[in-house]
Structure formats: structure tokens, C-alpha cells
Length: 104
Image 1 (cartoon, one colour):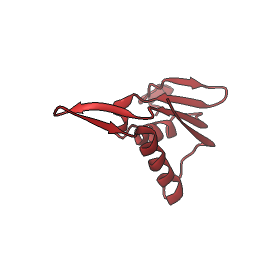
Image 2 (spheres, helix red, strand yellow):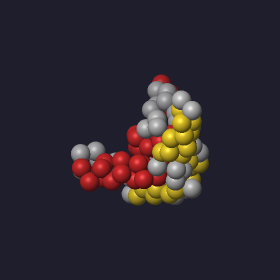
Image 3 (tube, helix red, strand yellow):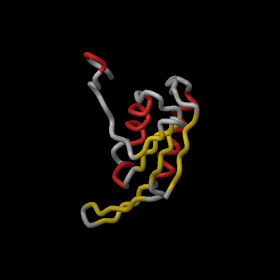
Image 4 (spheres, helix red, strand yellow):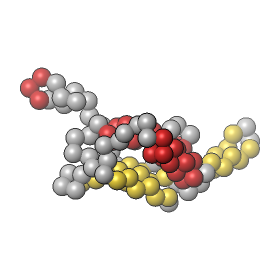
């Protein structure tokens, strides 16, 4: 968002941005799967001037300890299901020409 004299009022830090091609890159760490990082990345990227594509990287699986027990979170699968639901519903129109989800 821009304020007085065209100065930024709201700015987002992204992992990478190619202005020429309009590609925003976001790489989420393991805890991102638990914190709805994919939703945040969709909304924030939607607000970036010139963003045409989002490349979103998430862990294939995230493991963490909770109360002495190891919990497995299928980050890639969960994020893919979230994105499929957003696009399939048609209720939320995103201003992207494309979105790439990749697992690492």
C-alpha cells in the first residue's frame, strides 16, 4: 500500500522476487505447515504490485516433538490440499497467472 507522496505504508518481505517476470518465491520452514503459512503467502503475494506468479516451497514432511512424542506433519500434502480447495471453490479469485507448489 502506498501513502502520502507515494511512499510505502505496507511492505512485505519475501524470499525472492523477480520484478521483470513478476515471480514471487516463498520458502516455508517446517513450522509453516502448522501456522497456515500458505494462506498468508497467498494473501500477501496478492497484494504485491507486479506479482504474476507465486512459487511456494514447503517441506515434504515436518517432524517435531510434543510431550515426548514425535509428530509427523505432511506439509506438502496438506498445503496442496489447501490450495486445491481454494482453486476448486472459485470463491477466492487470486490475481496470479500461475502458482507453483514444490516440496523439498
